[in-house]
Image (cartoon, rainbow, N blue to C red; front, side, top):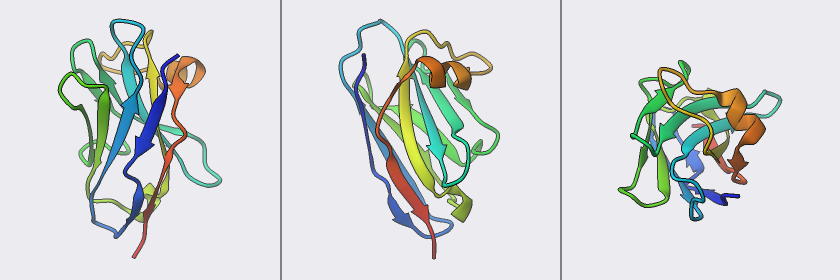
Length: 129
């Protein structure tokens, strides 16, 4: 099972930017989807983005499209979530998830990632003045 460690969270003012990192252990399958989720207090877990290591395809939830981007550092097992124009409602614990059976096309199965993915422990992001 893949091990994941998130970092880069913290306190940021509204309108600011933050970059989260996700470092993974060595992959045991050829290709993975790396996704980002978040969970705010009292709210359900929310899928945000997916990145395919097969072809670098990406997918974004409507709630973050245009503000968040996900990427990989070359061929390394380090993945990023770049967050711009942050809002107080973006305050949450952010998690990265890895799963080899999920494919990124015009969509991405967040449900399958929840059921089958390997999860990190999360990093707190707080957006406040």
